[in-house]
Image (cartoon, rainbow over all chains, first blue to last red):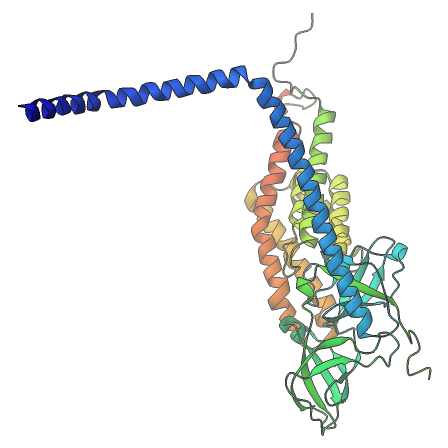
Length: 261
Length: 190
């Protein structure tokens, strides 16, 4: 009997609970909404002030974040400058130059930098990154300059292989530029240069310091004249992906090419 | 008391013209910056359809001036001799304005074929004088890998540029008036 009574009471409770639980839930929701609304109305002033305070805090944190990013970038640039300066003796670098635009549809990937005459940039100053030689400044305006890259057929540089010491001259063409490479010509017939050898500037011209990395050598082949060999160089720099570069404003032996010796 | 004309626009013609040219100037700056930013490989020359689109609705002199400005900006962005594109667009825009002012109807088909003609001749002139005439190694590849893709992109985008010019003209241009010849008292009727 007791069991029957208890079990029937449970059944009643369960039935009541089932009926009322949605209503309870609904009323609870309404209660919560009303409490929230009243809270908003009563404490609106506090929330408003807190909102302003938090906004200020966010602005301060964003400013700090921006400063931090700038400092980080500056640090990276300075490290890059130190690397560059140690790679070749007596070179003077400009401040980091940002690439601000590109010459549209140019096969050679020439671009504009945000430093010009007012920053001490001159015609034919070499442009580099920590990875190697990029090109020359070919137009100088007061606030910006144009850089023509190594891929251009207007640029020829005296270079040599670090491992074997064999010399040659770089030469660009439309076809090679579309593949992102340049040719090395006038290599001696008996050269020992192989795939992957590092090619650097010789500095004989007086236009560019010695020791800047140009890229890596590919296979060589006998040139059409039969007197020398030619090879393909894959430059260390992709001009289309550059964001920041440095201009070498001065270096030991600048302007004193082999013609003057 | 003089009654207001119900068909008269709310804003005066001077302000409408100023706003219209302001929109064209903003479009010009936007298109120039879009040309010099990005990868730089096969960019659409949006300033060209803009110049032709504006000359579609304007008179000869403003069209020629606007065409020259767009051409000069194109020369700077493309690294060409200043005046090369400017002179071409100056002549073409003045011609387009004269053509659409008196001979052709203003519709998208006419715009497209005129633009294709102007762009096509420019493409050939550019290719001939900057690449073919010098005969450097692999110059034909430039046509295939840079100039033709760029021209096709420009043609594709020209419809959007034309739509922008059309909207600016509809919103800010002077309302079109159709005068009936019969209303002209100077015409002698037999």
